[in-house]
Length: 263
Image (tube, rainbow, N blue to C red; front, side, top):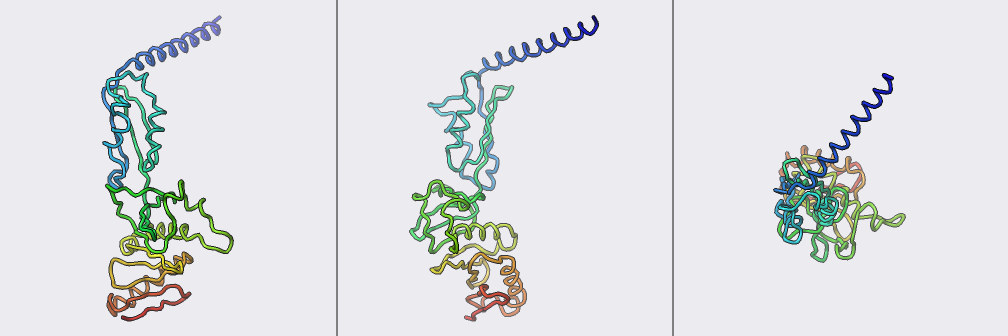
């Protein structure tokens, strides 16, 4: 008998719980949205998207949020609308107990800005995906110029890891360019020193430094650790002794040596 009463007790508790949750959900659905709270997570690093942009996308005259009932707000639809905007990587929207709709947006992170041979500009982000250039905001990242044939209007969507994969025995220059940019960005010194990558007619990468009136011929993206180690040693033992404006070309293409041309 006691066991039977325990079962009845827990059935009553569970029934009460679901009834209470149903009541709360119903009352919550009737609640009016009083405000929209927007947080752009990485707004210090990138400003492709602002809180005002998000507000215009989700709370304008056509898509009003404030002043309407919670149960009439389609959260998944709002998230899809934000994710349709290319600079947005992630969007999370939820309703709060104080009557607000909270929106948290994460932007895509640019790694390198590409200016192709036709003068068209776009970015590659940290996943190797193409990101359109914004006329109102220019990210302070590496710039790559020269004989780059990729055109943004011809490649949508584009990812260096899956699009335009080179045939066997041929190079995927865009993948190499992305890997070189990521390598430079991953090193504090080289990120501060290298400001531009130039792709010459032969497909070799030439690095333009911030300090020193020279060009660094890097070649292809092979053995980057060894090449940058050679360059670091030449900086310490060569340029620091003879002067940073002594050479106009520093060539790292040859294994085990650095070939430098004096001005």
